[in-house]
Image (cartoon, rainbow, N blue to C red; front, side, top):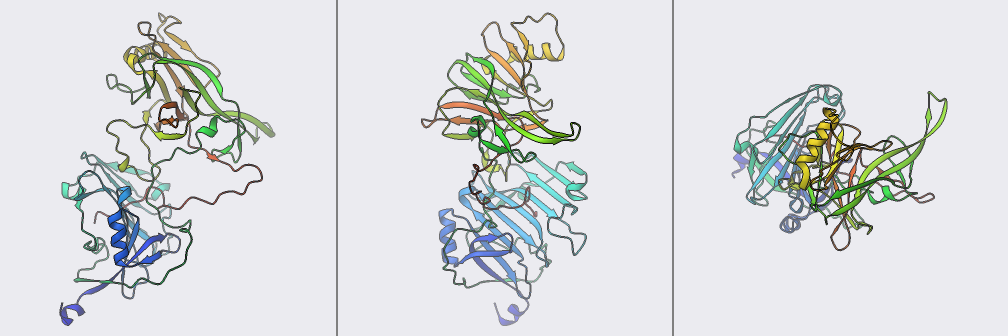
Length: 454
């Protein structure tokens, strides 16, 4: 490029680092382009910062972690506020990226804080099967939302994966940069300090994690559900058993379309298994009683397949569930519109769900106690039994409608020992009395953020 051409161009400085400090809007541990190339080839996380001369805030930051199938692009305005967040995923085709989610914030006030709840925003979620959703929030999270199906072309849904060092400035149009762009690699600052990344440093997005599931069934454990600052786990409540003669455990919302089958199935040895409720006791000030009140709440329900403790917990998946598509704290699970879930013998699903409808919905007086049984004083509501196979269905209440993940516990040998559904949210384990609380987990992006259709 000649000096004349260079004078008409916009110089964009490119810098690399191991991470990005969310609080300070600054790179953490700057590295050379050669080291970044090595991290790229190894799939390790790194970030790329694009800056223009005379502008304090970056134009955009690219966040890469191939081992997590993730590339993010965050675009900043002149005041250092994130205005776009693009979440791309590397799936089965190594040559292209899915534009999984884009979010744009439009700050109506130049002094409005970044991610202010009153800030209007538009979220577009796309999936590889051609489906998607566009959500327009005119007053941010404090107002209503207008949801439609996005109309996007295939080239808008997918992006060719550039080679290392050949990425374009995806936010050039957002910033109104119509002049030619000249990229210059900045020198990495000397940063030989040791120590782990700060708590405010970016990390790749993680789907929902199992949390302290085993502890919910251990009397004496101290937890919080986010509403009550301290709860103490008590002895699990035994609520009978479940017969699964087919060796295939179904976990589902019973209010599904007939003929679709259960949402999830998990192979277990044929047998009869204990049903438990994880319960925790807490005390709170009751305005109506005019003083402290102690109550015990159910936090989870469990099918106990074995007395062997779980060494690991994993989210149960259907054959079409792809965890590479999950964003921060997202889940796969069963859906319910009636605040109800169930454990059942998948081999007798159709007759069992028919008995469920006859008893609960139609109140059929001809059902015998051997076919339909109500359960009292428990989160478990009712039981149906198929007389032909002996298979059973036991329904349980959840605390609302929506999607509930199913957690499968496995022993050291990899065998299923328990299946758990949390009937509310995932609680947090509190430190033992007198212990020093652990520091917060490494920070990620703010909830549900991703962005521009660049």
